[in-house]
Image (cartoon, rainbow, N blue to C red):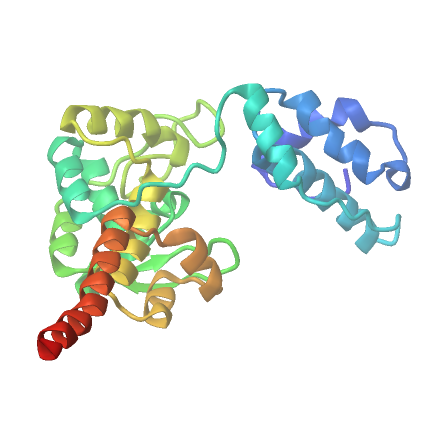
Length: 294
């Protein structure tokens, strides 16, 4: 009751509460917290256990500690061995590397998507926006006359102006904002019109998958198509320097961007070509020496 949980955390805590209610916080052990993962989500990955069990419990405990009501509880993350064991038991691999969006993919997707998804996919790819940021935008957040958008804060980065390409500005100027049929957490129609017409990120997934199917392209979901695509396009394909890409995409942690959001492409082909080049360069002087000796 003391922890100001957001709606997503509250949903996780509702599942957790029956297992820990009426307990003194100081009596909860790290192992007990970790054991709740497989109890609550037997078919989930260890990353899901961490996100939906360990993280919300730790947030509640840390809040209580800040208020001077209990000592802190340090809960270690699940180990790689635990992750692999759980993957074997559920018959599904976790941490599958995302396929980032590309211009070819975006153009094919846009050809079959509805006008709102069409514009939103392009918007996320050229700005590096998260799906939660894109769906939160209202017409008031856009300054189309100056080709920019007031991007909401997300994961520790402050809200700020982000420039938009002119062809997208023209498309957005002709897009009629609409009120979503349902609000983000209920069945009441949203009062405010959204630029891309969806109340939350969950509202667009079904239409997104349908557009992928109609276009006959790989099913790449919004975050991978947009934010991952933005980073990979600029850093890997266009070879911009990492600091420029991180600043443009609003990454505070340069290492995180390079480790998580950029993806090597044509790895096998590049390795084979590099090995072949090395072989040719190494054998050329040897052949030349043989000719001279003859």
